[in-house]
Length: 275
Image (cartoon, rainbow, N blue to C red; front, side, top):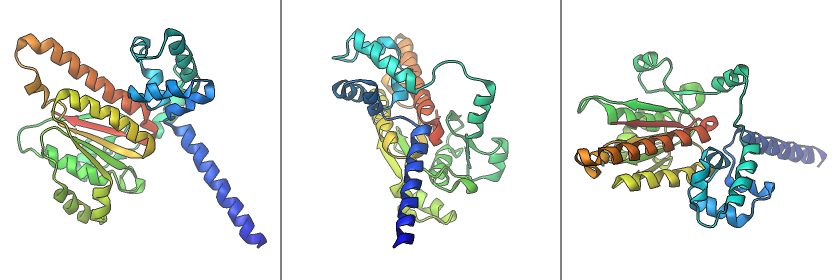
């Protein structure tokens, strides 16, 4: 009995340590702001606006927070102050930055020669652009990464799920099954670990990022693929008259991608897009 009680206590302690470690590595759920005196109703308004983490609140400009219905200037100031206490926004030493860079992993492309060119693979916490001619293997590489990101860290993986935003209808689950077999993974598990969404226009594509941010707070994702980021812009915006609007919309979409990478970079999120 005494031995079993000690084992239970040790297990509980390990669980507590894991929870603390998870909180330290973020991202912080936006509900954490309630501990700093932010009302639960205001937290709900932030989530409804697509701000699901404390990091996303801290990185959002003040003027954008003021546009959220029901959030006054005084509340915005209080929210920003609370977020800045949880998310460091000031200067840091180069040694601390170096330590953070050491935590970045690289996801194998499935090709040893390509990994050599990339100096290890696709770097997490950043945006990687792939471009090339028709039938040059861009979508094939995306499908391979959907599988390799689920591998253990010591095998060049990210030990996480994949999020796939498909703007051209080129995603093929059966291809994932073939690739999973190559890497000795269970095909059913691989498919279950891929969250898929079809984007039908540029506004819908941007809204999917808000949904993605909410999902990433609850589950560990190692990779996000947008296939492709610019396809819908070629049809939704036409002519020189809409060139400025197209560029602004695309720039905002890419900025949202980078913010998402910054929010969850310690969870080894890799954002991947091509045109």
